[in-house]
Length: 225
Image (cartoon, rainbow, N blue to C red; front, side, top):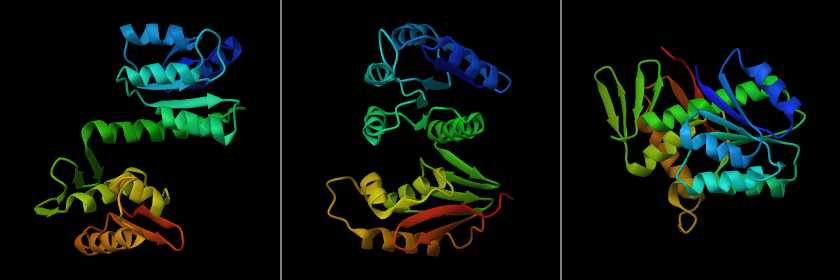
């Protein structure tokens, strides 16, 4: 069972979150960022749920210090602060997802599941779709006796899309993520690489790369067998 540390100063909210999640996960509780840092010096967890407005050390400062220590534990910010500037700060500091209060616990549960899934992909450096393995270390797609090796940029583009199935990425997001902010590559580069990927992966029916006209691209999982 995955472990989650809830960092929340409101006792009623802490206990409510624990009650709604404890049947699915092992839950630990801390009342502010300072006690959470102390806790994480002694114990590792699989996921953090972090409030922002807390005494002693708020969620932003906690996340800043945590990431500066090299701790990349997946984290979701759960807060009443809903302004885009607050979200930007959180994502710049290294948050994985952001949910505003009041909490819809069904939404929180599927966001936790999604973040834990992406974390597993990141640590194992493989994506498995049925009998297909997308292997990061070799830049290859492997299924039974068939192996297709891609160029680095082709693979990174495919891996990004498959890590977030059904999520639409804009062309700008993909350029910045794969080629870097300082790259002189343009939207035509994304289009060319996507077309090459479709040709090279035509023998794999497990997924499809879909163009969203005027926006960008997404990967759709077609089958898992």
